[in-house]
Length: 78
Image (tube, rainbow, N blue to C red):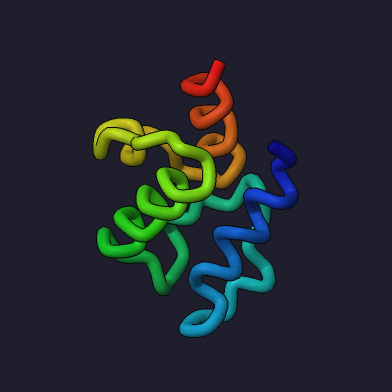
């Protein structure tokens, strides 16, 4: 799994409703003006569907950037 592809999937998920064009790998997604807890659920579902990894809410809470999410998924997948 490539990190840029993962970033693209996250951007695509929200781009219809929000301007995610400047979202970078090391930006804190939870500090984005559009972020809400509902977006966390959307990302959890995306990761489950695309990568067959079901994150626990506590794991999602611990990851703040796209890079941290990517690393978490790779660590779980082994």
